[in-house]
Length: 112
Image (cartoon, rainbow, N blue to C red; front, side):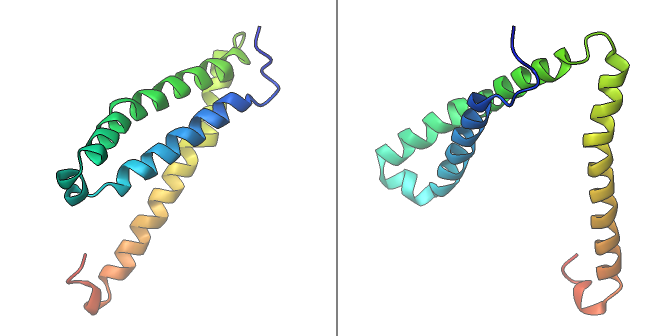
């Protein structure tokens, strides 16, 4: 059985590799890929598997996290709601308010 009270370092390493691949993939401009077959190959290779990698990591992390709450699924849902959905809603509200305020300034009305 997996110890759920200890951080799983291989997940952190896998996420780090995935993030580096995303950054590397975004570094290849269209112009670079047109003139270099190697750039195009690396770009296509990265984009072939970096998103599936994140899905696998996410699924594994969900399984580890959920296994802590097998007796109380409602507690799992409550904890995840408070730790993830509430911050997203708060951030969205702040961003919306910033755009609302910025739109009131005449010089910014052309850009929003």
